[in-house]
Image (tube, rainbow, N blue to C red; front, side, top):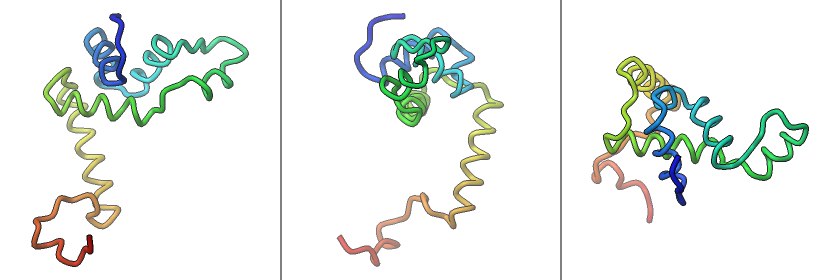
Length: 111
């Protein structure tokens, strides 16, 4: 893997080499932590290393989502459908929060 400075660049380098990581966030995180955060999962100090050095899962997943939204490193159609279904389910469970409203719909918000 190439030398990268930002989380997004690091994630891109992994996605470029691993199709499995494009479809599985857990696998992406493991590769990221092992390669970029230098966490050895077999060491007795794993928990301490994990807590002190690992990039947060949310940051890694957001970088992957941003790259894929830009059209880079697409997931398989099956994975995209599964993610879309989960997103729709989440939006429905929180009563539509997260939806983008037209400006006139937002008049009740004070700025």
